[in-house]
Image (cartoon, rainbow, N blue to C red; front, side, top):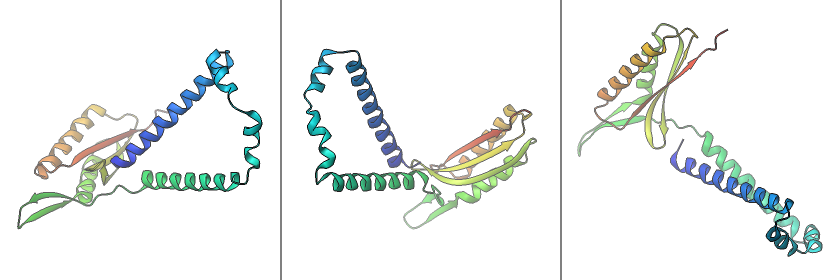
Length: 183
């Protein structure tokens, strides 16, 4: 996930959470006859609030709010579900020379290496951009009677090999292990 999208997601979650907590707290205070809640609620003119939907500006305002909400929701969906693929990592950057490594090929190679481990049903590797860091991401699917400790050692050695091969380039390696349920 991209850093900006993650920040916006968290900000919206915090704002919605605080709004729900405030609304729920006020409702509880009103329900249990807290004087300040009753006094604050009595300031509202109920007849005026009930007449709001009959105003001439109500329907256009409601339409604008719905349109803005739909656009924001679509932007959030696009931001959260947009492909995070990345192409290459810069291995050498000199004034007159640069070398780049294809991270998709490296991810496929790591997946093929990990797929040879006993008990692994399949492995898939992709290169993604995870919060601004190019990442070799490998998903491994294994049987229920899988030796996790030995696999972890093997996966760590693959990650160390990738780090050495890229010569200190800022690239992360992530291996996600999915183990079948016992039947």
